[in-house]
Length: 230
Image (tube, rainbow, N blue to C red; front, side, top):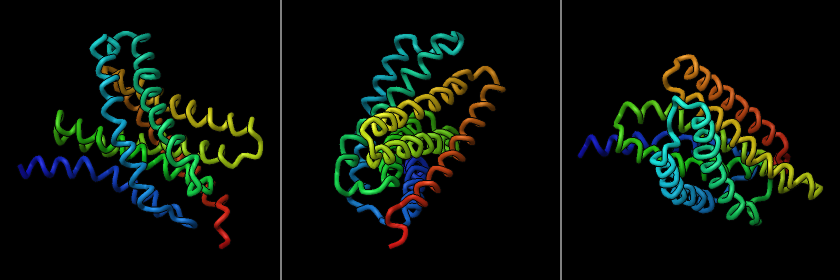
């Protein structure tokens, strides 16, 4: 029982830590903790149906790492598009149209809350199935990856709400889905090629580059905040 409790705490910790970190990076106009909690819970709720869809695809044969075409479809469509589209739609459905979404940085904050809700439940499910080793590994790989993809998504979605022209807004919204799906797909493609150590190294390089890019985008949104001088 104690071991199971420790495993759950270990699965919870990285996602909640990232939420705390992003909350404190939102320096100039803090979001309501209730709204943040709601978006986190929405991310939790969408996790199970997405994972069921991925499980169905796996049983249908879309997880064979020895077949290049199958791996591409699995990486970019089954996993990346399904997961990022679910988060994207939640972001547009709840925080995006509301008045409290009142600066571009909010796109990053709420996208991360949704993504960490998703990653946290996913982590708990993986922990129950694979144990401590996988849970620790995911704390340094999968969970930060989800956060990085969310920051990139939130950057474009946040910019889209405050774009002057409708056409520019639609283009930024499209980028808010396409870019995270592309990066997520490439990352998963290398991870799924588990027989090749070089490809695993490339996956980690992509993860590191994504985290660096995410950090630069946060800095950019902090500097653009309309509440900075208040």
